[in-house]
Length: 161
Image (cartoon, rainbow, N blue to C red; front, side, top):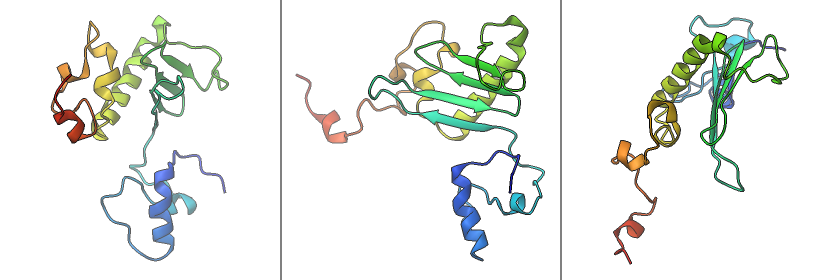
């Protein structure tokens, strides 16, 4: 069975639950794939898919990505962003990020990505959304209540040396 719609790993759990005859909790981020398995695409099925890579390990950097049927935009906070026309360049060999003819597409893809960041409470948004700020900013300057400097409250309470 081939499905042409966007699906996510998060969709497997509600699918298995539904196939088992139970009802999945409403609070899940995933959606059951059962309608797609039956050849029916629900009218409100997503027309894009999002990915996040948490870097800063072994030299890799964090990235965020949004993909529609035709376009793929990758945000690279410490390097050049990427924009690909997947219809004309499925191998992603020609980065169109600086092509003025694609400024509208780029704006739409950035808006989609920011919307997804807001919807998922992506804490990295304040760390890497450089196009919103003319100068580099520290995360705590933008959103101090959401970004503790450490994850360990005991460590934060220790006196500074």
